[in-house]
Structure formats: structure tokens, C-alpha cells
Length: 533
Image (cartoon, rainbow, N blue to C red; front, side):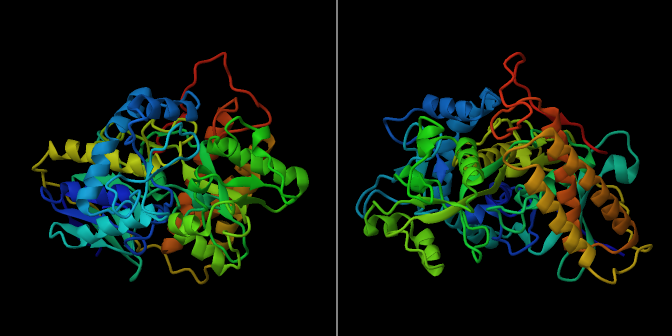
């Protein structure tokens, strides 16, 4: 018998978006927050640069809006961009009220230090040294851990959403909760709730090289799509231009803020190259910088390029980038004296489950926020430091919408328990690990920074074989967390490939040699895939 837990709101994911929503609702409802690893583990924890917000008098809301629209290559939803930018300051003030400490201009200053990153025309990145995500995540988690109405479940991974159409054969499609695997005990559980929220982050682990932590396997996107939600713009995978290149350095990102403070990208011979690719050089949008690095590496046959900020004083570097400085020193690289070897890596999923301004999906009772969602903010390319901002703004708007529905009905029909009676324990796990590695490698080789139709079709053929193996395994064996992640990555890979094949142009993060120009003959449109269920 599968154990059943009931809450008013079920939030799957414990990053900045999930915790912000939980804290906003906790005074009004019983809230469960699930995390498939330690509660703090996720992309939010590793965000270095900061959060974009207009605070400088020389800056303006319209400038932030214009920069976001331009970076998004004419595919942003302008209404959503304006809504996000206009609510940025309130979101930052809420974080400060929670106890988040941002870097000031000086010891005695009351003014926050702002930095500038790619795509921004002004200094508008508020930050906590170079570990903003850690400061935000740990502060919010500390508040959540002491709230009596927030119930935290580490090491619990979603299996599939529970919907009235699929589990109860209703004509409508209302989300009723989620089947969940307790990873510690390998026990399937049933979590029911009138409101369920997907806040599981992105899908960087679909690629061999990524700045994302191991938990970024697209779980929410895959579960939402399988339940019947439309998914949009999955071809737009942002590759961060600068991750540390070292055989022992796993997924360590070198923040764009270094370039905001004057760091230069260099070839092995010490020559600069970014001015040949864009007037803003190192401060060009991320897609342009990543493609430029990829181009130079392939042209020269080099394994990496170099990022040099050694012209700044040692004191400046240690004060502004303490985490990166210490991490590089651990690998024998003194960034105060020498350039840092860097390569591009998959970083951010700009597409996702389609939502409205309140985080509502196509399914009643189901919301999506953060990197899992497609709000229309990012368009074809996310501007630097708009990611945590999106988490905050849409967690707040979702909270306001959910509060209007309180008190929530607790009358949920009897839901069938998870049935594992006809499967057996797998004798070995080698097939899961092998398929995981194969998927990430062909996605990197064929669906990476530069694409062609031939490469995409090769990836599609490989994926079909892989998915058949996954389906066979699923029907015969007991599930594990590793298998669930593989299944979700395969679904996300399918969505990325289908979306990339549908877009017959190069726009933003999607660059194909078969259609190297923007299609100016047709108005830009989202690439939308209907829900699977």
C-alpha cells in the first residue's frame, strides 16, 4: 500500500522559486516542499552574478525592458517583460526583509554595489559578492525550516503528476498531486493537493558539459508535458560562455560579472578576439559570446580560451570574486596573476511549460514557476541575471493568485496507489548509466551551440532507440531515482530536438548552418509542442 500525504499546496522543487512561493503561502496554507537531494541543492545555490533590478538613478525601467527585449531577439512577450521589470524592486526589498545580505559600495555605505553584465546597458546587478545564489537560497531555506506550516521533504523525487483525466477517467484535466519516490527507502508515495507547483529548474544535464548541478534533469518540464501541458521554445538552450576548463573542475561557472568588471577573453597567444564578433565585445549577449568562443576553438583546434582580469588589483579581485578566486587557487590558477581557462557549457533552459502571468499552466490546479516555466520573459535568449528575478516575481504573482482561492477544498477522490506489483528489481544498473552517458554525448555533439538538420536528425534517430529501451525498462523493473532522471532527460531531449527542427531560422540561442539568418519574412513566433497526454 502506497502511503498518502495530503497538503493544501504541493511544491516540487526547493530552489529560489519554490521557497519564495512556500514562504508567501505559509501563513495561509499547509505547504509541502519536495527536493530530490539536499534541500539547498539546485541551480539557485550556484548562481554567482546576481539579480537585475533598476536601482541607479542613471538607469530606468524602460532601459531594463529594452535591453531584455533586444537580448531576446524579438521573441519576448513585452507585457511579461514589463511586468517583471516593474516588480523587480519589490522582490528585492522582500528578499532584504527576509534577511538576504547584498554587497554594499563600502563598509559605511548604505548604497548597494551594482555590477554590469552582458546585454545590460547600465549597472543594475545587485549581488552578494560572487555567491548571490547561495546567500538567497540559504536565507530562504533557513526561514522555511522554522515555519510551522512548511513541511520539507528532502530526497523525494516526482514520478508523475496525478490528474483527474488519467487517474480517475474524468473528462476534465485537474491536477490532484504527484506520485513521488522516497529515494532513501525506494518507496513510492502519493502526495495529494488541490494546488501543485512545478519548480524543479532546468535541464542542463541533458548535455555532456554543463554549469548545472546534477539535479538539473528537466523533471518538471517532462512531468508537465506528460500530463498534458503545452511546452514552448525548448530549442533555446543557453550555453554560458565561461565555465572553468580543468579536468577536475566539475560544472564550475565563471560569472559574467568578471567581464562586467573588465575581464578580457583571449586566445592561447594572448590576442583578443571578441571585438571581431560584436561591438560590445565581452559584454555582448551570451549567445554571441558562446558562439564566438566555439568558433575560435574549432578554428584553432584549441580545447579552451582564456579569461583575464589580472589587470585589476589583487585586493579588488579578492573582494569582488572571493569564491572564484579560492576555487581557481585550488586548481593551481591564480586569477590575480594569470588568465583563467574557460569553455562554454549548457547553462539555462529558456523554454519550458507554458504559463500565464500567475504561473498557471494548461491544467487546472497546476502551476509552474522559475526555470521550469515558459513565461515569455526570455524570448530567444535570456539576459544575464534575469533568472532569479523571474523566480521571485512569478513566485509572488502565483502566491497572490493561489491566496485568492483560499480556503482550498480538501475533498479529493480516492486516488489509485502506485502499482509496482508486476515489476521486478533490476539485476544491474549498467543500462541506466550507459544510456544516460550516451544521451548527453549525442545531445552535445548534435544539438549543441551550432546545429544542422543532419545533426538533429541523427540525434532524433539515436533518441528513438534510447526511448524504446527506457520504455521497456519502465514496464519491467522497479523505478529508481537514476532511472526517473534518465526518463525525464529523454523526454526533454525529444522536446529540444523537435523544437529545433521546427525553427527554420537562426534566432537567439538557436543557430543552424542550414538557416543561418533570421527569418524576416514572417513575424517571430514561439515554437509550441502540445502536451503528450
